[in-house]
Length: 293
Ligand SMILES: NC(=O)c1ccc[n+]([C@@H]2O[C@H](COP(=O)([O-])OP(=O)(O)OC[C@H]3O[C@@H](n4cnc5c(N)ncnc54)[C@H](OP(=O)(O)O)[C@@H]3O)[C@@H](O)[C@H]2O)c1
Image 1 (cartoon, rainbow, N blue to C red):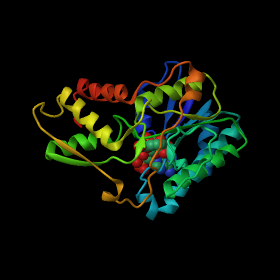
Image 2 (cartoon, rainbow, N blue to C red; image 1 turned 90 degrees about the horizontal axis):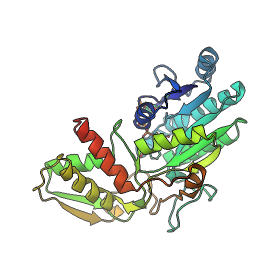
Image 3 (cartoon, helix red, strand yellow; image 1 turned 90 degrees about the vertical axis):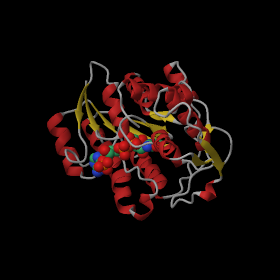
Image 4 (tube, rainbow, N blue to C red; image 1 turned 120 degrees about the horizontal axis):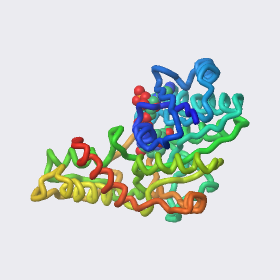
């Protein structure tokens, strides 16, 4: 099976490549090889390469920067998936896309289901939702997997940032009034391969299971960083919980951003492992590969 992978230099794509099943050959492209905002380029590429499926890991992911860069965010998160989905439909192949928990603006305390009402706030969230709708309307077979709080070996991420800060400081202040579910991009990549093998279509939610605040996430990351020798075991780091107003950000963030994983668990027969297990495995992998944070 030949799969066109877009956004191949990104964080999720790094794990998509690592976890690729043997029978799959990937055509790896990032913006230099294939700019997804260019419909002619997408069409010509697919005509030449004749992939059996398109897997889109390309996105504009700078949530706060998007507030001042609406055009680029729109082009990459709306026009891009539209071009890919329409081209996939034209060539009669499935299109697989990745979206975000931010299409909701959770303020309740019930995990969001796939068909819950969307209410995106902020440019990034709105463009990701508009991209989802373009895919629905493209007329082909599609699978859109929404995920949250992603971290992985292939990109800058929250646990690495906390551990780096803890190397330099004795005190960290971390937001404790936003809840979500951290997701290992390795686990998400494996989930994508499972859903592709099952020929799943429509919306699916995937994160690691359980929920926490950014503060809880930081506390766990620092503790595991000591276990895997990224930080000296004896170093005392005072992690202080604070409210979001201490860190005002250009784009709004939902207070409760946990997604229901029931549909994924039912389809694959297995619930995702806990966020703590995913994080432990991530730091163990970094340690085994002698990578720094
Ligand atoms: N990161 C998170 O916390 C998070 C949370 C929820 C959902 N998601 C979703 O998960 C998916 C993967 O995210 P990620 O963190 O792996 O993203 P990422 O690391 O930012 O990777 C995206 C890749 O797409 C490339 N790209 C940008 N514009 C392009 C274009 N016009 N044509 C082709 N490629 C282009 C980027 O290149 P440049 O770097 O050069 O721009 C980058 O290599 C995205 O759909 C994102 O919305 C992410």
